[in-house]
Length: 289
Image (cartoon, rainbow, N blue to C red):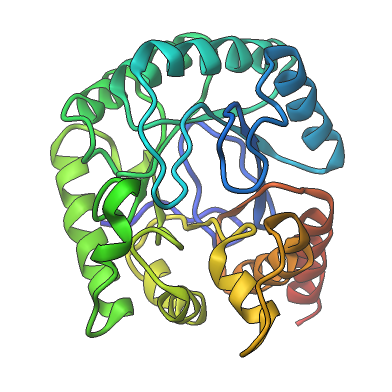
């Protein structure tokens, strides 16, 4: 199954704007406990302002989430997730922002789409909630299928692979087939290797090194490396403690440049400006070939 390729060769996602380079997805976590910025944008007004600021800095779309998916994080209840997410989605959409909703719940996805979200970004790829695929199919919006092996509370124990690139690719292929069989049009799908989800640092680095293998699935590719543990390990070296998450933005921009050069459709980041510069430089270099 292959989507129609856009002019950039990165794939076009039906229902979303098309860019001539790797897109930049800015993150707004409306949570008290996300691993890198929990609590900073927990208030609706602050979260909407943050999203608008990210657009000014160069974000092409803004991903709004109300449930932390950091390793070991407990789940938030449905009512609380709705309370956090829907007003922020509505506020940003009313300002003309292209909004995605980061949720594993069909009910939150449906309410967010009704409030103006144009993309559903489900880190479970529809596995966490049996109603998700049907809800997204009915809404006729794009859907991110991420590689996922289980909820945050126990996912570290699932980071066991003989060949992480081959296994992640195969598991994603199976999931994509199931999603299409469930009614979501192939031209509305985006694939995400799930860096940091049931993976250790070596696994994450191997996936970044082999992004073309994931692109070979035939779908636009989203890379979400921002501030993750594997970058902390790289920056720390052998004997030092990893730097705090907020000190990994330059490393994040480096991965963004790599992902852009390897044909990613978009990168998902907490701090936009450096990555926006990185993907534009990558595009300029491509244009000079």
